[in-house]
Length: 215
Image 1: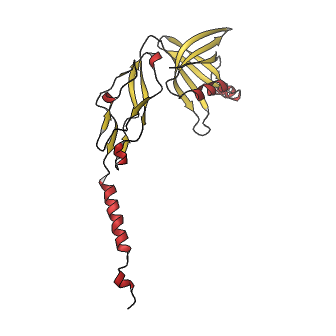
Image 2: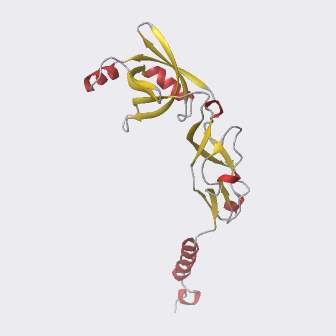
Image 3: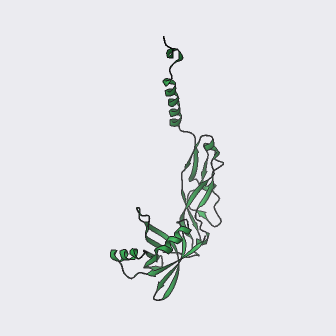
């Protein structure tokens, strides 16, 4: 997985007014923490962070965080743990960076992307994506943005379970192998019933030829 870099500065002041002043200067308040690290309040440049987010899938990002303090840089390997976004303006409000070790496994959720059209859908079936993420464990350098699952061979009534998915090297699934990921269902009874009812309504709307002739 690609590792990105990002600059940050120690933030001395706390409180709502301090945060407002930062945002007016196009900075984002952030925090750095970890299992063996003292939490540090940070500020990052909005433009730099926005550029990083445009280069990535936005999830499970490994970052080389360069924390500037008293003229020195302290390099930390982190993941973007949480990101707050304004629901109206879609701007970034706050970021949480969690320190990781490259030689210790992570347990993390990975998105599942289904690719291709199941043959069962071509036959009238309905594809249901029952699980959009799976939980895996791996070393940070083996992490992937997402996992693609080919569903083209699924017929009506067929399913793909977690244990059927070939995972990339270094990834181990931590959930039950029988966990369903995608299923192709037969057309529902209600759909067939609606079709019959429509046909009946169309027939009822027709005027018999004998009745349509003038007396």
